[in-house]
Amino acid sequence: MKAGIHPEYRKVVFLDTSSDFKFIAGSTQGSDETIEWEDGNTYPLIRVEISSASHPFYTGKQKADKAGGRVDRFKKKYNLS
Image 1 (cartoon, helix red, strand yellow):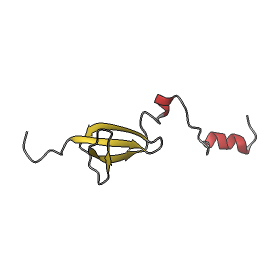
Image 2 (cartoon, helix red, strand yellow; image 1 turned 60 degrees about the vertical axis):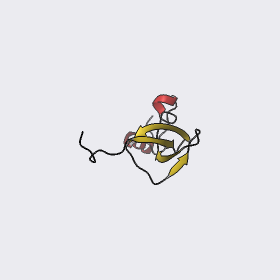
Image 3 (cartoon, one colour; image 1 turned 120 degrees about the horizontal axis):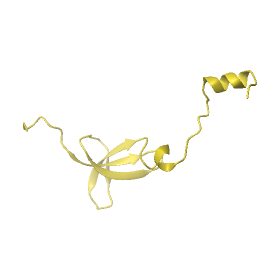
Image 4 (cartoon, one colour; image 1 turned 180 degrees about the vertical axis):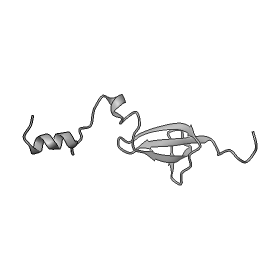
């Protein structure tokens, strides 16, 4: 491998903003934010919107779409079941 062309690989903390679930993993992604982990070390913090703690596939809970699709709006407009 050539020196100086690869990004730095290090441990970072990912924070799921929808469920406040945190986990540590290796990544080349950088961040200006840091967080102190349970082991007492400080790691870069990367905020994510979905993780295994909030994804419907892993939780078994589906989120209902409040807006509805085109077909739902059409049926509602013309009183179709």
